Image (cartoon, rainbow, N blue to C red; front, top):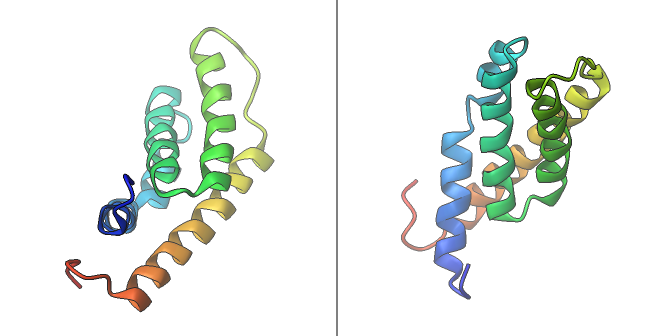
Length: 110
């Protein structure tokens, strides 16, 4: 983040706040490939911004499958793929929330 830790902490704060309800919204989107792709893409992008590489990678794999389906593919989405994304999301979100709470970075509202 341009060698400015405050910017990174702001991104972490936005990630925690914006994605607090992501799991429910994502679950509701399953079965609607365009909507699910948007949910997964948003998570992938935000995770990449804060350096959560594992979740960005698992979201990228699912997004690629959804894009293939949207392009006319008929392959199903393996449940293990969604399970992996959910595990990675829960872990990354909790780690970010805990770090934000413990660090109380300067200039960040509580």
